[in-house]
Image (tube, rainbow, N blue to C red; front, top):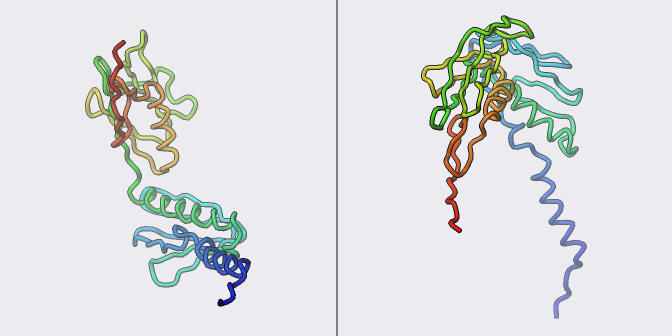
Length: 213
């Protein structure tokens, strides 16, 4: 009978192979293409992105480095990808930089749809003016409540209301855009029985059937 290899030896081989895969951030290692209209200015603490729509800065951890392997291509690297925190921030920072480049060149847009009998929205002047950093405009929404819902538009968001049941939001910051869209949605979250509510983008829900007693 042939001798069996030690179990510990097999486990070490398996863990070694798995560790190689874990030490690489799939998102972080991807290069970032730089459009001709964008200027990238890296320092030891941040990356400044300037484009047609403005400029913004993404903070960098002290273990991160920005490289330009070829013209119009940028890569983010970390000192020790075996450390979990560095590996996580690697992918996160790369995503933030990529989103910032899109935000400074094209911006981000998301539509919201009001679905329900009598649901309506209008963009009107805010009687409070530009207090609290607003634009002087507000959304007047009728969502089936006894009173209308008023949502002031912040200065970093642009709003269009092409129809009585559709809102279009625009922002250079994807995160801020998502927060404001979620704020509006929370006034009437889509419900699964009649399909009414405020839907963001291509959001869909599965309609539930009411059980008869």
